[in-house]
Image (tube, rainbow, N blue to C red; front, top):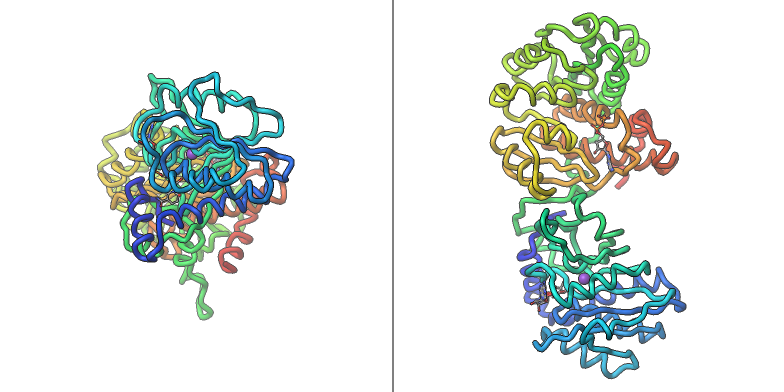
Length: 504
Ligand SMILES: NC(=O)C1=CN([C@@H]2O[C@H](COP(=O)(O)OP(=O)(O)OC[C@H]3O[C@@H](n4cnc5c(N)ncnc54)[C@H](O)[C@@H]3O)[C@@H](O)[C@H]2O)[C@@H](O)CC1
Ligand SMILES: Nc1ncnc2c1ncn2[C@@H]1O[C@H](COP(=O)(O)OP(=O)(O)O)[C@@H](O)[C@H]1O
Ligand SMILES: [K+]
């Protein structure tokens, strides 16, 4: 699914109106009906709705929604902040229609005219949507403050008012004014603002409504950002053929583990095999040999070093090398990375301590082979590429860095970002906070390494890898709860995740 900028969203509306020969007010009605249907499913007639409407089309949605709710006898009142300018044409049209109903409409002149809010009131925020063009100040700020001070459920239409959709709203020095919604009912596609941690306090649960904007526009409009959905994954996943043997699915290797951290080696190795790699050699230290052979008998083992991996340069057998889970930070690992970068001409995945070693040896950055995949969590990313001023700055930085070094950066998080060498960013749609548990990242390294071994391209391996990893985590959390989920459960549910994508 494509993630569009505000300008593109506006063009998409206009394109749909032209192409379908409909009026913009019909599109507004579609949006309002979608919100209405959801509200009717979610709240019974004992609730009253207080709808705050700006004078743009977001406010127009609010007015149309007020009329629809009133038509089936919900109690509704509408509040429009005083403003001398006329509303948008569709706002005015909907206001005319609303005036013919029994809905009470008040103009808010100052804070004395703010309505009292009682227990059964639901607040609907239709002040500003995608048309926000400057930070909220003055009387609007007071209204937003008033709404936020209430503990009643607040439903934002399209976007919590005050939040920019495609850039950062949070500034270090200023006190921002944004609705803190419990639900955001948004139209059509995912929006960049909903994918970053800094906006979590404002969006609440985001619900998407298909208002049937033109598919042609979506298909033909390029955008730097996409949301990884099941249709994208279906296009990548390759079912196994019948006349095959293990040689067809590649020879993976993982350089992993050290004394005290063999769990990371076991988890990444199991995940690599469970993702379908033909065969795997885990390169481990002597102290970990017995553990690996017992915990993952399906993997072959090579030994290097005593308590941590020592010198190793026997890479030529492998189709892909994954390095990092549990290897610890040792001086000799600098040489290990140097050797790997120099001698191995096939895909490489770098994670965990291997990234920390890189970050302390910046002279190695320029020798990272093209198309390498690195999988930092936010702290590792910061160690590698420095601090960011906002989550949007981090996104830009990831994309610029991926372009500069021609590598893939899998920046792990709630919506993991894959930044590509050609300047695109893909956000993951699967996964849950139960996966914030030790070892979950090691599992991801194993999966991506295993997919690369099977000849998925680096981009496909990243996309399919993060999606499967998150989906396995979601299936595990469904059975176990997020709290009880541990990394092993992600591995154990990889099979169910594969089954789910085979079925969709
Ligand atoms: N264009 C369409 O056909 C559709 C639009 N829809 C709705 O329309 C919204 C976008 O509508 P608009 O483009 O009219 O924009 P908005 O309704 O989001 O807001 C624009 C209005 O607010 C003013 N404004 C912006 N920032 C302000 C600030 N900080 N302080 C004070 N005033 C400010 C602008 O001058 C303008 O009058 C969407 O979010 C969605 O809710 C939906 O009805 C679906 C169809
Ligand atoms: N809140 C969350 N929502 C979704 N996925 C998450 C969340 N927290 C962590 N994850 C996923 O779990 C993995 C954690 O990786 P990482 O931080 O490297 O853990 P570790 O180093 O312990 O293995 C990442 O793939 C990340 O995307
Ligand atoms: K809004």
